[in-house]
Length: 233
Image (tube, rainbow, N blue to C red; front, side, top):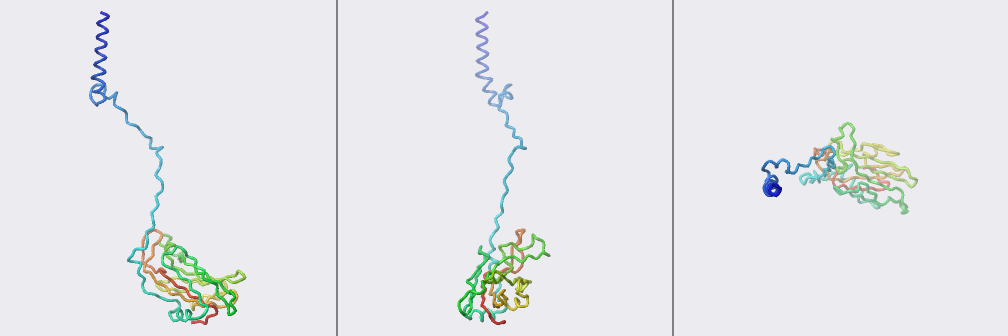
């Protein structure tokens, strides 16, 4: 009886190992639910959140890179006259360039001494009546500021911006006056008059801060010419 019991136990153990267990792993049989590996459960509360994604600002569309004519402020005749005068300095801005502050050599007097340093800054006209998402991005310059720096550190400036499709004098600081700026004259702190003129490409659209393109004048390639003590136009 003892030997028979041992043989029966061995037979049952062999059946379990050779038949039941493989069938359970294969997904069938009475032990399938016990032998099947349980799915791993992940608590979503501890799942790391995706990092912020950045949206690249696209370049100006090719269709809108074509300027609508080359214009001048205050006039083309004024610009041509200043360019012919000795001692004239020129600051050039290329469309899309990263440098927005341009500092040409200082204007000198008849003795060759530096008198006024002119700094040209391209920026955005902050029209506070326009909602912030609709204002131009900084990559779309709509304003030019000419600043005259004297040897004593004092400064004055003329601010030019688009009003519709036309460039106008929109601000003045220091000894400069709005009327003189409108005529292409920047009164320096020393009392000297800096005559200036702009030749610029007007681009027909600008990219707003919400990422959309909308109609509106933008400075393209711009050439600023300045001369010391130039007469009014």
